[in-house]
Every structure is written in structure tokens, then in C-alpha cells.
Image (cartoon, rainbow, N blue to C red; front, side, top):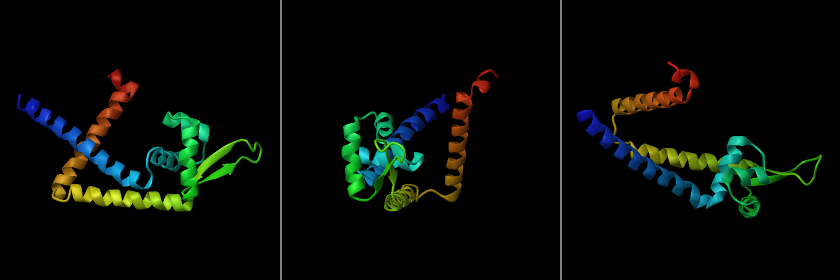
Length: 151
């Protein structure tokens, strides 16, 4: 019974912390890249050059919305258009060096915020949290692995 009560408290605290951290990260990124701009930057960083139509599909927004957001990013020199030599109608978007640098800067700001959030935890407490997160992640992986479901 006591474990059940602790787990309920844990679950509530976990979701509160998750929402608060999500808001911290959103605030960091949306100051520089409002709206879909931050998601475009993220996708280009993760995937490399993408066509506008691919971005629109991935973000579930219209091609016009991608064009509007990307024009602002291009104007600010965070991304650039790349034309296809074989088919000039095909346009890809990619990060510029300035864009990569800005994302790294924002990520460092986020890391500093994370340090502030957990500043009062001892090294041992951080080590225990890390072990718990790794175990929870492994549990999720095994739940999603069809082979482990048969065991």
C-alpha cells in the first residue's frame, strides 16, 4: 500500500516537473524562434536538408505556413534555400552556420537552466536519478520490443 501511495506522489510530481521543464525549454527557444520556426530549426538540425513539402507534412501545417516561417528564418540567415541542380523547382531548406551556432547557444542556455533546477541535489541523488531514468528507459524499450513481449 505504501509503495502505491509513493508511486501516486511520484507520478504527480513527474508530470508537474515534465510540464514545467517543457515550458522552460519552450521559453528559451520561442524567444528566438517563435511558432513553427523552432520546430523547423529542430527538424533541419536532426534530418539535414528537407523539402518544404516534407517539413509541412512533418509539422502538420500548410506549405504556406512553412514558407512564411522559413522566409523569416532565411531573412535572419538561420537557414538557406538549396536548389536542386537537376530540377530547379525542387527547393530544400538547410541550416546555415549561424543557425547551427544559435541552436547550440540555446541548448547551452537550456543546460544552464537544468543545472539550476537540480542545483540542490547531491551527487548521490543525481546518480540515483540517472540510474532510475536509465532503468525506466530500458523498461520502455523492452515493452516496445516484440521479442521481449513473448518472454
